[in-house]
Length: 400
Image (cartoon, rainbow, N blue to C red; front, top):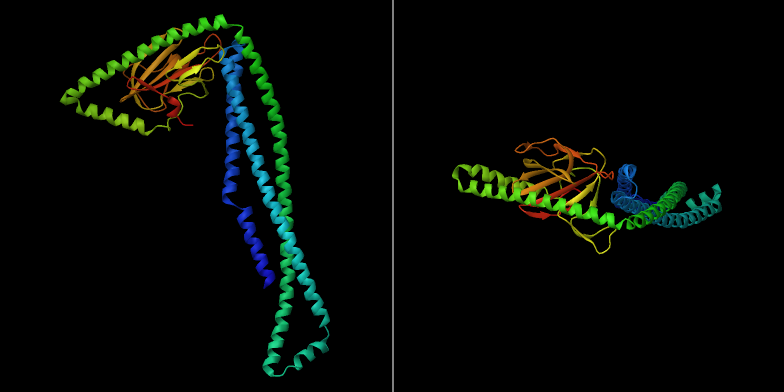
């Protein structure tokens, strides 16, 4: 029947638009990302608080504040994306409601016409005259069947109207729920925007304060550069010794298995690129390569790894199985551990306590030490990955 066809078309339309799998996945993903962002914000807030306890106005505090601002902006973007998704849902729901209202009006008109026709032929005499005026017995049977079908169609039309009214009511309720959800998100966005403005205000004041300490910062930078130069030389010397040892062993037939094992280890290490767990929790306070100093103008920093700012007493773990090639102490940096993984080496510097020894085999995620907290209250791990002597960007090897 005409009413049934329209009803099933409406149900099909609702299924496609309202219960779209991709839209639901998108909403679920956005909510998951927002929760992950909130978790990171909580961790950064703790690092920021610890850094500010020991000394106000430090580079570590600025790094934590910069990270906190990035996370706040990420949270606001997540809220905005959720609002955009809800706006799309509201638009789709409104289209469905309009279509349902139009169809409901047409269904009611058709039903009214049916009732009018029924009332005109409601008398028993009229029905009998209609039947017995048939020119043949076959026509009488056809008219009788028509009358039965017409009665059933009228009943079906009433049921369709009831079902469409129910669906329309549900759609209106769902739309209102979405609007309420959007209203709550808009309120959250306003609150988070206010928080972002406060953070940026603190950032601006902190930068101005640090700029007044330019001489002190330059002295500290020079001390750090000298310490890093010593560390880099130590790493290079150890790796060169390891490469020379491997070359000597490669010439000896009896060490073929050892060489094969080193090759296999290198291949496995490469195969885990982008899958390695972080050696410590926290955030990247200094990236790999050349970059501007966060405060001092026209000063370029060079980093052969990444710096991970973290919590006090944070445990540091090996990102992959290997063998400890050196444990050394560098003034101004702290203890360093160098682990070989075939042709690859990982370096963990800035440790106050070391739990492994030279020559020791370590497993993936094994704890190798604890992060040192310096005089400014900054807890920071210097982490490097090298292929032989060439440094690579660790951020491209760790999980996102």
